[in-house]
Amino acid sequence: MNPLKSLLNPPRTLLLIFIVVSTVGMILLKLPQSTTTSITWTDAWFTAVSAITVTGLAVVDTGTTYTTFGQIIILLLIQVGGLGIMTFAALVFILIGKKIGVSQRLLIMQSLNQGKMGGIIKLVQSLLLFSLFIEAVGALFLFIRWIPELGISEGMYAAIFHSISAYNNAGFSIWTDSLTTYVSDPIVNLVITMLFILGGIGFTVLVDLKNKKHFREFSLHTKLMIVGTVAINIIAFVVILLLEWNNKATLGSLDMMGKVWAAFFQAVTPRTAGFNSIDITSMEETSLFFMIILMFIGAGSGSTGGGIKLTTFIAMILSVNTFLKGKNEITVFHKTVPFSIVVKALAITVISSGVVLTGVFLLDLTQRAPFLPILFEVVSAFGTVGLSMGLTGDLNEIGKVTLIFLMMIGKLGPLTLAFSLASKKVSKIRYPEEELYTG
Image (cartoon, rainbow, N blue to C red; front, side, top):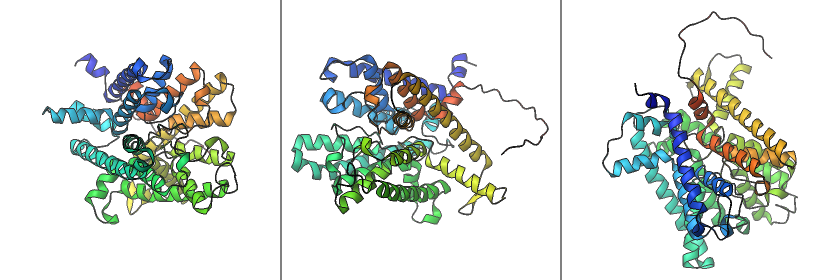
């Protein structure tokens, strides 16, 4: 067996490819034609990683620091990172007529977080077509809104940039205040939120919705994602609306419809989208803590978003409910959830919690900042969200590098990182069981 092939398993290969692409992005963003002023290598690296992980956190202002060329580099990194590096590699293979081997299919399967290799190439083709179509439709609606206000060239550019950034859950904006200017604008609110909700619900769900007509025909994953997404968005909307209703710095100064639009937008954007239509730093501490929980949960598996994933969270809730009811099997929608899925969900949650706690510890040790902004930025980076309480731009070099690694881990997934470091040796020895007292 080739020792190099044995060393570079799919998780390690993905990690290596990711490092190479982000390094290329860093070099391109450091070019003089990419910026309006000189930036450090760390800032260029941070921006490249933030773009390819579709996070949206920024140490410098995207609209004023980067030229149009630099912004296009960022946009390309967002597109590649959102749809997956291996997805684009597969597209190139298809276009040149080269056969996609088993090793490449394994990499694609790993990058899209799929459990089966069968039909993976068809899924990639559907993913690309769906994504480009949705981005084009989103840009078209934003054309209609922004061209009369900004002019043809600037309006078209803003529409394309924000459509791609929104669908890929990146959160990058060419405007310093993100979308706060359009806090009460129904078109901008609806288009942007629909884009990042569709991007965050997951590619397999979109394919399922396209191919099947009735809810009962959907896979269990699709059913849970639809129900879970609707439920968590409604809960988040009501909570944000109530908590911020009288806050004059956020919703309090808006009229009734303005409050509804702002609360809706800010309720769904923590699901890894990263845009904001109100000032994050002016929100109530309770609202900010609630948003931290939403950012940690994240979007759907196999989507452009991050976090532990909504289905992971649902699996954990279902397992607790099963235990409290004294049942031995987790059932939902007349289906039984395999025990292996619960173990995987537990592993993801525990590893993710450990990563977040480590990040908080490092920033608390090296930065002069209050605890809540530190926790907020760390979870935002790990969940590839991009929302900020203003701390990211003030970080020292250690803080920036810490968030860079958090964004990488959040994008690749904690299990991918764990598998890349773990040994593949499996013992066949079984030992006798014995009770362990817990609780």
